[in-house]
Length: 40
Length: 479
View 1: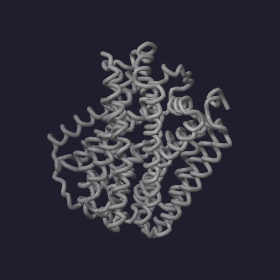
View 2: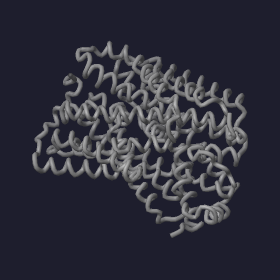
View 3: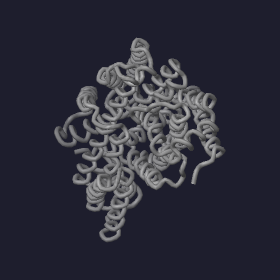
View 4: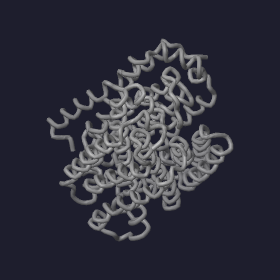
């Protein structure tokens, strides 16, 4: 059973989009923690 | 210098990048460590780490060079299931989220995973656990050190031993200077570098090669890589899932963070880290599927990631992947150095050699333990004994045997010491037999199954009645 080009492209595209979102979320968390004085 | 160098960086550029990032990590580590006070400050960053740094350090530590280098290797060897199987490593982070909350609640003054096993199961289980944990810690540390040397050699032509020495020395130095605070602080920046780097590489691979061309070339030259029913790959998928769970459940790298996080942070940090970690091996691994389309000659499977990047992006690609993997290496090496040295300091030195050592004395010795551990890892890294994935998967039989003793020990009052000890010994032994007789992809499955059977049967036949309050006094109860 061979994975289709469509399925492969969806798999990789969604994974790439999620990975691109991660640093944005981390930076938002950092700013929030910093403002609350809860970084450390 | 070898044939790989033809598609890589000029050694002078390699040295420049090494120098810039080495100085950056060391200065940052020293800066973050300037306010570290006492053993808790050094080993556990003061126990007040917030959500942003907590999430980033969990992600960065789990994104090792084995993710950025072995994920493409596994995609090249096992195709789609190779990268999907690797991404199931995130299950360990997700499942550890509730455990982190429980650990923090049960052991508010705990220091190491060894503290838990000693108090929960007694000294025999503790010693078996320490043997497994330290063996795995060394194995992973050596794997990371070797990966550093391989990367530097593949991308710049700089001698394997020199590259490995520089990367290991940098990590040892900033971990020595700042303890866990330096490790977690640098992890945040390293996480951002890794994530941006992986996304840029993936995006350029998609744009330059395209899914249609990639799929057609793989289908023509390596159709098995697109086969969703490759038996060995499916076995690998479950094996990797159990490996991830076993590694995270037992390793002090993760326990020390559970102790170090601010109250209420552990669950969220591990859960979010698991969700965001899951796609990374797919993004990092799929670039290996461009190999047939690019007609790339890959002399060693563990170098496929850097080679594809250099082929796709030329010098800038080689620079990007070099920075990315240096960050991934450093984020894991520093965590391993800190967590393993904590085990050596508290469980071996204080636990077995000098039981009456004070916290001040331990705090003074902590830096020397990091240095000694780094020196030992350097010696073991000198000969490049095997490929990265082989070394990593040799240890799976060990760590998978700890899943049930740890989980049952945290949740089941009935779990007993004899069962836990036997589960770790028999699980490891039979798992290793599976590794050598059948293949690396079944070692964790067999080890975890044997361990589960023994823990459950022994808890049923000879139930213990453990008093959870014993765990709360972990500090006072230290031998």
